[in-house]
Image (cartoon, rainbow, N blue to C red; front, side, top):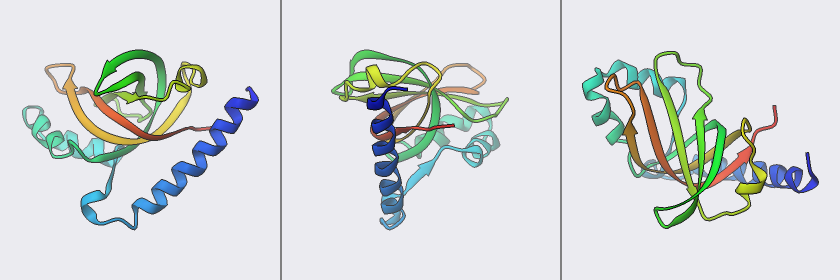
Amino acid sequence: MTNKRKIFMIVSMFILSAVITNASAQPAEYSIVRIDDAFVNKVLQAAPIERDEFIDTYLEKLVFTRGYVERVVKKNIYKQTYCIELIDSLNSSRMNFKYHLYTENKEFTTLLEKGDLFEFKGQFVMYTPVSLKKDIYIFDIILQDGALVVE
């Protein structure tokens, strides 16, 4: 691991922990939604035809989760230049999420590698159901903060 990458990881972890700590002190309308096993269970409790309505309630909110990097590509969407594509790190056999994180930060193109575990927070702006069973979704998120997770 290069020194630049180590420094980026350490600084990112400090920033992310400060943001998470600060988020708990914010009013409820600014609370962060964790996409975790509990979130997956809530989605699964809804009938497939009602899942989109359930997910609609989280649009424009801040979300926090982690995923494995697939690739970082240049895409000009949401007034952002780069897209970090992730697959979720949850161990659900019944529901899968893919995340498209949009950012202006060019450093991610050189710092992130396929398979890296990336923890992030951002604004949830759009989703796309990938299958008719509504068991796979792509979430578009404008990245606010993120950090590599050292395992």
